[in-house]
Image (tube, rainbow, N blue to C red):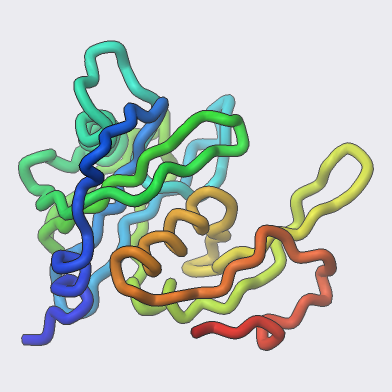
Length: 203
């Protein structure tokens, strides 16, 4: 059986030797199988922040959390009922900044493909799995974000009737780069809704 993608992740990813405590952490849970899939969630429409957006399981640090890993595993457990003991930790990715300004540490782990996840309805509306290869090959599609006096178009991946953009998309790009040595061009913004994906070079 060819586990080349998951093997590459295991070979390339490590935890940073210099530990910087983040204000929040997310878990990039990837199924350990021939065609590995990434676990994504859609946040509840009733949340104050990022309502209805696609994200990884995760959230803000609690006073009792001892590490970034503890934050990511606790939040994944609370949101999806993922048992921390079912996660094979591989490493972390560089710190990211959310649009709210808080620092977010992505933690990467493998999970068994048969693990049953249950959405916590007060936090997330949906749990879904997207093949890693589909995300790697997805062409950037303009996603409109309306500001006070104008619209700004951000690149997005549109999968399973969901829009993956912003921080979640940037973390995936980082995963491709550091975990798989795959350079996917990803502009910060797209200036026009008439943007054509073929204008970007996917290496």
